[in-house]
Image (cartoon, rainbow, N blue to C red; front, top):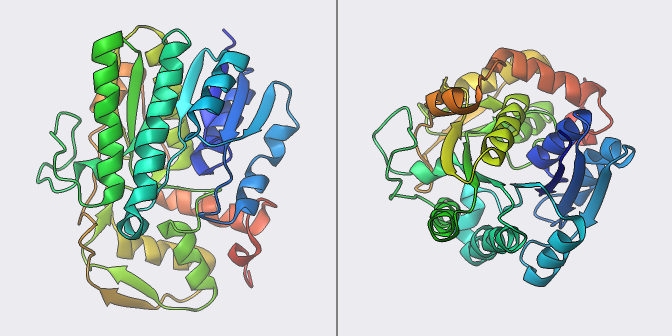
Length: 329
């Protein structure tokens, strides 16, 4: 059944990928994005080039913090479902500017949830993060962890948004699916993310600062995340319920190993300098995805080795990739 799906953050890394997959399925997609200069908006412009040529796609330039414009958009397009991906991201950056993270992640998230409720309890898939687990010794991370020890303002604001979603579901039976992403990488990835940043430095023959020798991350390829989001849409549209699901690969890998794989795929040497793990960062992230597997068949398929190969191919061949990612290849 064709749906009208509102995708916030729809020109960003994950949002544009979700929009493309929905369009391939024959859905109508309304993509809302502010083109915030947190990173070069030109990347977002490239992200939506294909979608702009498709029937059933509309790009709306706007900010989720504007409650009035968000409400008007819901009234005009009458979405059947919402995928809320708009957020201020970045653990380290949030330490320097916590106010903007509260404004976008908590108040912006509330604006979307309020508008969805006012429009007749439109089902919402609400993106969260593995960072909410913070200071926990329970590895792999499970959704029943209390998640009361966030290590950064970013994590705290995403956890705060989750708690607001719980309250609204309790009060109004609002259908909401919270999905916690684990270290997503792949084509269209943000410049501040590890794979993108490391690629730039490797191509420029610059040293990479490794924050902690034994730091591990559950690197998850973007296509697997997108399939998880599509499953979450089906799940949340089926009944007025609330659920929280990890979306990761369940295979934590040392960050040093990631650097080695990238250098090998690019055909360049890696120069690594060892630094300390920041106070805002967890030493390991690892997802237990059994709940998502049981609820909507989530099954990550792309290994880190295959994902890195796909990433390097995209850097070399896609017009979407920034020039700095092509380098002397």
